[in-house]
Amino acid sequence: MEDIARTLRDGLGEHGRAVSTRRLPDFAVRLAARFRDPSLREITPALGRRNRHSTEKARRVLGWEARPAREAVLDRARSLIEQGAVQASARPTPRTRSARAGPVPAFGRGMTAGASAG
Image (tube, rainbow, N blue to C red; front, side, top):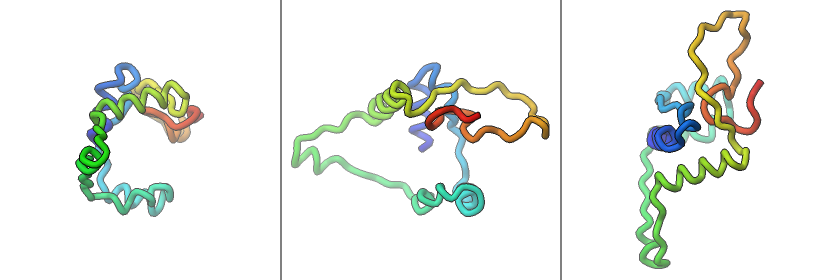
């Protein structure tokens, strides 16, 4: 996922500035899945695994050539932004949040799903 985040950040220009490339440790994702966000449970079995796939058989049998991963990721991201499926938002400026400021919006940074939170 880190390589996809870097591709988005480097390749989307202004839209990519808000994509975070920080890593969240597996244990933190597992804890969040258990106590904070049950939707994360779907990805916990894949944590720590490195999947390697080959398109050799598709090339050999069908004559199919895969697109470069970078090109495919960027084209899909641009398409999702154009269709409004995700919203590109600017990186927020750092500021100190007081207890009165309220909760941080769930989709306050990066490319957001659907409409902006608020």
